Length: 111
Image (cartoon, rainbow, N blue to C red; front, top):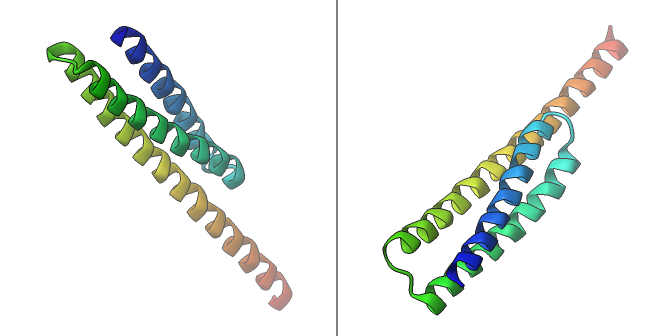
């Protein structure tokens, strides 16, 4: 039964990881698409946290299982932080792109 829980946790981590990779790729292209994925990553973080807590409470894992569950918890946190950074890059790049666009328009007007 605990193996089933671990597979659920790992499946959610896999989805979270894939979304984060997409966010990194999209961060210089589309702020909106990056944000859509960030929302799902945040949802998955909560789901994984809850699965970990429930698994520990229900099964009281020892040794190898406990290490694996705690490792999943740390990976969950790290992936979420990477996704946050991708969101920040997307936001900053969008602002930079808007400023550059406005600067070009002003140069044309006043040239």
